[in-house]
Image 1 (tube, one colour):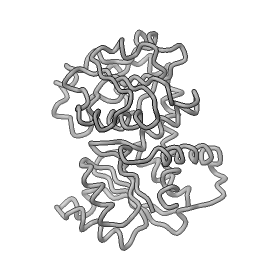
Image 2 (tube, one colour; image 1 turned 30 degrees about the vertical axis):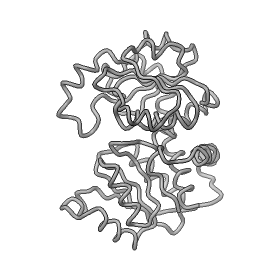
Image 3 (spheres, one colour; image 1 turned 180 degrees about the horizontal axis):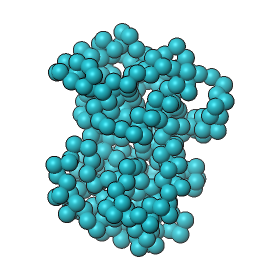
Image 4 (tube, one colour; image 1 turned 60 degrees about the horizontal axis):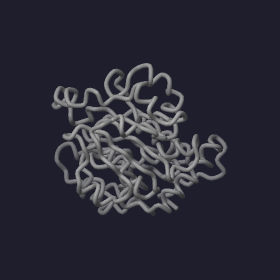
Amino acid sequence: MKSLLKLETLSLADMEGILSATTTLKAQRGRHTSQPLAGHTWALLFSKQSTRTRISFEVGIRELGGQVMFLSSNDIQLGRGEPIKDTARVMGRMLHGAVIRTFAQQDVEEFAAYSGLPTINALTDDEHPCQILADIFTFQEKRGSIRGRTVAFIGDGACNVANSWIFAAAKFGFELRIASPSPFQPPQQILRRAGGRISVTSNIQDAAQGADLLYTDVWISMGKEAEAKDRIDTLTGYQINQELVDLARPDALVMHCLPAYRGKEIDEPTLEAHAGTIFEEAENRLHVQKAILSWSVS
């Protein structure tokens, strides 16, 4: 039994094993030779709204032979103040695993500790590990190894997605350039913990120059809606568009973890020009998460 709580603590060997298994699972979809979750019931415990994460995990658990129940925090006693450790102790006696999408990283880690179940972080305010593993799989599927390549992250560099890219860069050995205005640059303690070839700049042209991958995320993450006006004012100009794409390598990929807000972090023509990559990236969440689920019970 294993848990995926954050990329910071996941070994490179485990990440590479998950990505290798993803290739097989994607190729064999509908023709799986084994169902590692047969006889299992897993809970999806979500405090945040979701499209891709919920669909991909529900489908993935079922395709691996398991049953799944979706529980929003308002459906159970967590919504009325029950401590996460008590919820975890109950679920640990009844379920076989849990996928959690919430705000506090501590809640996912505490649930794993008290439940004794394989627990998967489907997004917290600190990290989004499943997304970045799907992103790396997508890149490698299209362009080969990401080791030694250059990834440019444009926009809010102080978010969970950027954090997971930071830890992935240090472990996989690729260069990561984060282009953000100073209020949205990653904390120095995260950069120090990660190590690796990571640079931070406010100049998006410098970050994009010769990059193999241009990547962005929404400017207003869930829970940040009250800051919307200030965020838009500060982040305007940190957009992936054709002018920026022209600075990258001729075969550079453009990715977005979705949902996309056209005209803000990416413009409409650029998103549509790279829609094939972006929506395959979304599909790959299913395949990567099936590999994570299989790994967690191995």
